[in-house]
Length: 103
Image 1 (cartoon, rainbow, N blue to C red):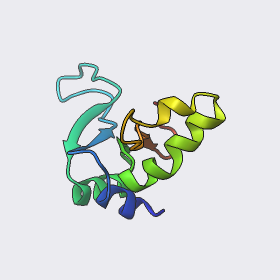
Image 2: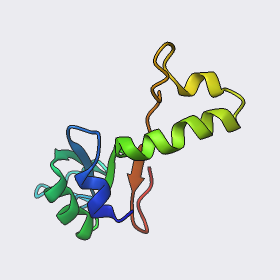
Image 3: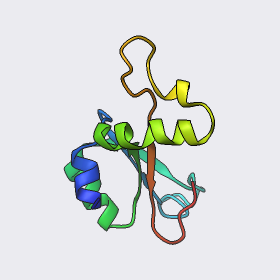
Image 4: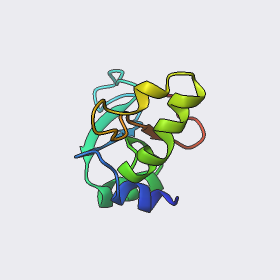
């Protein structure tokens, strides 16, 4: 999937963008290594293109495809479905970052 599609179809209400600020502020005081802002899909794509890292939940369709299989492969197939109705149970948290970012 392309990043734009993942962002547009995320199950998250907001997407977290991690932005590297300048090393120090105008007074020369040290700043935190990352600033986190919650944005919509359109702003997240622009921030990603500018070098920000992204954190968001995968689209529900992808979770439904992968979570039950991962649970089964780990020997915990029962944990990948809700009891009673069998709906997939679980989430995939997605991190997207370029070179130099750490999470």
